[in-house]
Amino acid sequence: MDRKESTNRRRNNSDENENENENDDRSFMTTLISGSASEKVKAGLALGGLALAGLALTVGAAVRATSSEDSSERKTMKAPGRGDRIYRDDFEKDPKKYFRNFHKKG
Image (cartoon, rainbow, N blue to C red):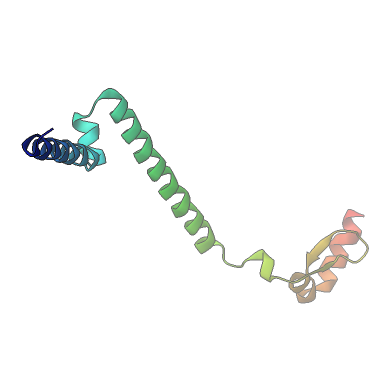
């Protein structure tokens, strides 16, 4: 192979690589509009996954923001006369009410 053939091969290979890079750089939207069926499915699934992840993050943030008081920050105590746990601040506000209701259920 002479020098001229070698140079031509390198040029052809670089042209092919540039074309491959151009195809790889297509956006999701371009693929959805003008891509092949399998490319459209792949791009659609990727966009759907991103949308689902964004929705999950949004819902999680909204739930955390709307909870007025995190239950893990409230202290609990063993309920007098029972085996379960109750919030200490609720009991301390009105212990009479707790025992009144406890005896009514009783």
